[in-house]
Length: 416
Image (cartoon, rainbow, N blue to C red):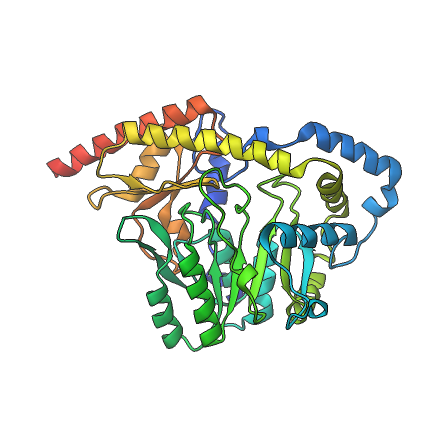
């Protein structure tokens, strides 16, 4: 007799990440991996990391292998805080005449930072408002804490350019949802859509959060991967009221496997987050914190990031050109200026799940748009594509296969 287990209510609403499940199929080397959001393998500075690792074990093995403080390795915290200040204008202090102190702490990957922020502010049944579509890892982190995730659609300007969350719809939702505690946004090269929130909308999101007494959780893991256009100020850089928690990581600029992320938030907020982190993992991996610090301070991090941007500029250009050439006009897609993702909308006559299934049968892996809906089970007729891990030739071939499949399914729909 099969045993029945009584699992917690917190996990009832959670399903395995569609992306992580698709990863299982990517062990087949013949699969063209448009599904993975992994950094490009050639972006890892393997040689420099090997040198730094040897230096760490020769000079400070005990520090690298011993317990550390929950807040993180202090030299790394200091270096990250300085970079945030210099590059993004982030970080306030009472000593400088500001109304509050911002503090930077190290977390075990950006996803832990998102989960801890939710844990600090959300009781079971409280609402987190996210872009629709949004990052499944964050949505599951919020749901695991009993929060209800609701979505605000990404809007389009009169010229047809996506420019972030529909702020009028956001205000309507804030009026309605009295238990809204967080507005979660990925304003720069959003995952999964690849779009960037305009400066006007960033200011409006901040204004609305202040008006309705809601915290903003700004997730910016792709912000340094711009390969076209001008940088836009972060929402956190506008924070004069202590209502923005900023989250980012080294995953996309150094290594995703290190699991080194960071949060910047008002000191009173961070005190609660640190207590929550102590329960989860005591502290983040000390060896990789030291490695990150030494890379930041002893190597050319900006030069390395410039090389990473060049990789994605090339790969994105190849995918966009191939899509323009191969896909029928009934299919539309975003045109990112950085990051890793392109979001493709299918015409209503083409079933998205069947498209994904048949693409995988032809050795091209995509992520269904239903994986990214804030309201679990909500419909989507889009797919996420990433150009980060496939080779240049595989990108060309994968888009050729998808174009062939798209034309085939359109012809079938016309006959039906």
